[in-house]
Length: 301
Ligand code: COA
Ligand code: ZN
Image: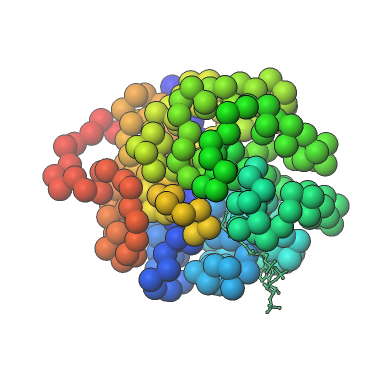
């Protein structure tokens, strides 16, 4: 059985998109518990960002503290935009964070108010300050930007990543922040990145704005990636990327991969129950399909 690493990002990418209410911390924790029970081993549980930028993430410390204590052996990590975020995460005991930077200069400015030079300088600063921290990179808008359009040259992300590789990046997630990628582009970009950096771990993160999240993810899996990111229920949409919808949904992805004979390590029934419970408790933009199916046909796994 071919193993595949599914990385759940709903508690960060999904929850951050919810602006009509402050989701109670207990509710976030309950959903993380349900995901953990379904077998989710890899999860972005929150982000250590400015509460002025994303008020929804202002309980990052409480969420992280809970998850770290309850699941010390799992790969549960957080997103950070700067040294301050990394310091806060590190102080709580987290030893893995994802540092976010956008390939697009205008999205980088809108999202984290930094130039590319400032973002690179901050990455180096975090790398040097916390040598024992696993510092992965989320490359937002890899495939296109809400302000600048689609990126057609696969060498653009390759060259952008070079100073990060030289500064110690050993894992990157290529993020399709606005759901603009197509399978041919995914193939071109992934092949170029893998050829340029054979030692780099590469993951993918697709939003489902145009219904292409699944085929893009499958394309990436067939080429070979170290993980695919998805969000429970397909909840989401970047608050700083107008028009973006949620990530590809975790339960839709797990259902397909389980049926295809991949080993996801995740049980579908409790996962779907978690997605349905989340939809009841958290109003938002859901792109998942299984949560709309009233009567579930028993599946193989
Ligand atoms: N955690 C908590 N607070 C933080 C912080 C962090 N990581 N970084 C900065 N702050 C606080 C500062 O203390 C300051 O507060 P004050 O006004 O009360 O003094 C305020 O936030 C602004 O800080 P500043 O350094 O001037 O940053 P900025 O206004 O240029 O914003 C970011 C830059 C990166 C902090 C902000 O844009 C951000 O958090 N973006 C995250 C966006 C995001 O999560 N997008 C979705 C994920 S891809
Ligand atoms: Zn995203």
